[in-house]
Length: 189
Image (cartoon, rainbow, N blue to C red):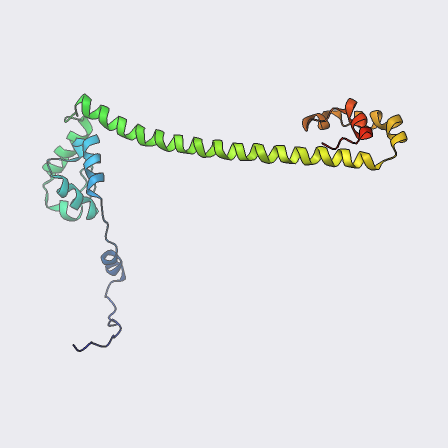
């Protein structure tokens, strides 16, 4: 078997650059999405099959009755009557279909919300653990620092010096009344 040698594609510029862009852009629409869309709003069908609606969307046509591309061959009366049917909602879906559609939509949204809530709860637990660790470290550092000071001076003037910071020390679980006694006994936690 003889293999052909690779050669680059020919360099032929198109006459109209916008025409080349239109050729490069091909819209692909999922048929299942079209089915769901038509189930929610059957007036968009306008007497067409699901595959016809899909092809119409892929060609860039509007679903509201505006004409472009392949739908340009429809008569004005057809387009206006389809638009009027869409506006008036003359093809109502049954209550069961509406209930199923709403249930499908809400179930997917609520599942996403539940997953987000679980993720946030996990992050909250991790943040609470990190906060507790930071508070424990601060309590240890405060007691260690006060342990380095002269115990006699700390006993005499410590309560007055710590009174200014009682509110902030209480945030991390330090009671200023017992702090000096804990430092004197050597309690570091």
